[in-house]
Image (cartoon, rainbow over all chains, first blue to last red; front, side):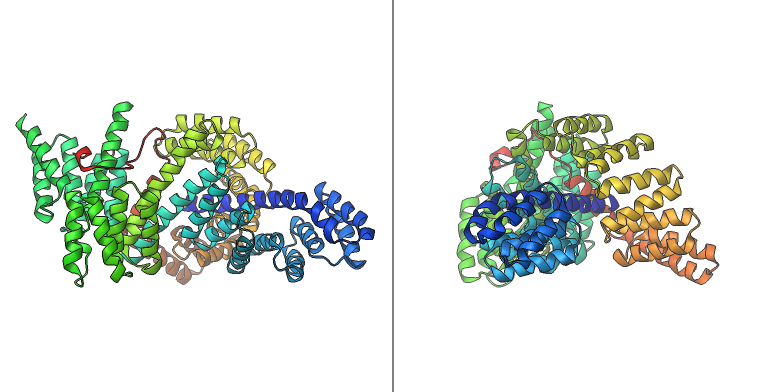
Length: 291
Length: 332
């Protein structure tokens, strides 16, 4: 249990830092065109200095340059956005959030600061608000993978596994050749499977479905004796549950215990006489018994 | 190997059919006739007709979870995994306490996970993720040697992966090879300085080597990276107690149980710490809580859930095909 928790936590953190780096690269690649469109020519040199410093990791220098641009009239959303990145990279999430919010206020349909705001809010533990911002970002720019990646992180943090799957499905559709998204999609499904079991346990800790699932897992893994124990426990919880005796019959047959297999399959057929699977297995058991 | 795969495929096909056929008791009184007949169609293996009838029924009863589960089972039997997933997601969204909805959604999610991993193995067979999955699969089956070999192959494919370095560290730590484990964790932390797993692992190695100040330092860092980690709080509390910083240790353990109220080990340590400080009543209370939790665990399915989690998260045998379009004649 502890190990599982630690693992998921670790993956989330790693993902977040990876995303921050990717976001920065993505954002910087888009700055050139935005700069040409809106920043007064007199401020372009300062702005470019800031961008170069940010790219080189000279964060204090970048902060100074962006603050100068803002002070001298360049109060444009992407300048606030970049200043927010500087603070985010310095680990000062609170100041980063202020800058991203200002960038959003100036340009509500600008997805980048919403994505970054979501990342900062997640780092601050404000998961619900982060999720809202990221959902808006995905709505604004549905073809932007990074928005989906961050939203996936938010959903994982908030236990929304259906949402997690949905985001990685979207990412896989956007970038079908990227094996990482395929892996993450597989992982998301696996997380959801685990969540379903936990939810069943919360509703009924003695649910026949839990024992049945356990039996199936052991059966699949080839641990037949353990599978029998789990299925028998399931049959105790609900003797009329279809499928349990069928599985037991199958295992008994696999183990060469034909008499017991026959007894189990008869019990199954008493519950569901029309079952073709049970009928087929009964025939096979009869043929084994005749040998 | 081939025989094993064939056997696994047979087992998977059989399991699938068992599910499809385990629906008869689900139907509510209203419309019971229609749904019972539909369920019989499933038992008889007439999946297309069963699906059509369930769909028809849902036109007039769109919120009927049992009918939707039936539709999902029919879709699944016809190989339409995503269609079935979509229907089951809808059931769980509208009826979150529906155990059968959760059960089938969990099952199909686990299988879709396997399909995605198999697709990954087909597309990028030598990628670090595939080696990682294989390693996890071996580790889940207690085959440590093969697990290590696959983790090393993963590391070769992606030398900067702190995830793999941590996994190797965990493997060594489980084998009580703490010095070797620490080397992997150190490499991980060097690659990603705020790598929780690496920092935690370093703390655990230091703890086992009785270097308590070092362990405390690492666990403190781990709690700063993830303040919500009850495991890191527990470990920090433990290290502080061992270092005779009992009051500080109790404070951390209290945080741990606040984050995770059913953390039995934390109560056990708290009992010892209170006893050491001369607070027998508090020690008794903590011990009582620990015993209650232990009893509850024994009586409940948590143990099984833990085991199951281990099983369900194990990567599939990558060469093994799950049933996409099972037919009755393929079953025993």
